[in-house]
Image (cartoon, rainbow, N blue to C red; front, side, top):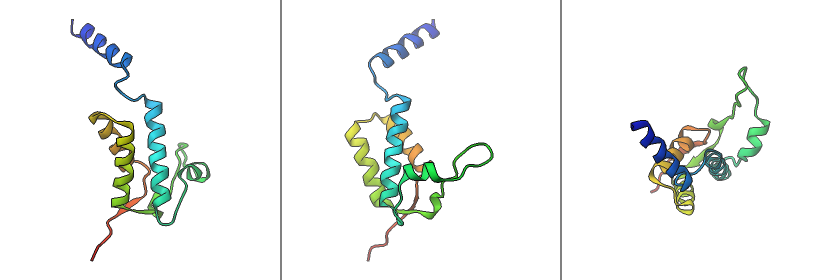
Length: 114
């Protein structure tokens, strides 16, 4: 009984497109990372880093993200701007934040204002 109810509920969710699909979410994350690297010091291009970075033994890409620094306030503005344009649900916002902050994003530095 429980499995049937759960599967029907999931089918309704998928049919109504409540959630952004996996491929769409990954492309949104890539665009956010590209915007963060363009605002970083030194400026970078995330898509160029993906193609030119060396690979490790398992085939993973070694992006030198510690070499790039972005202001925390401008990073938050970029992320919130993307969220507001796409009208993400609470779950999608959490997923998006985790992937951007814990992913290959540049280091965040807090500007000290006088």
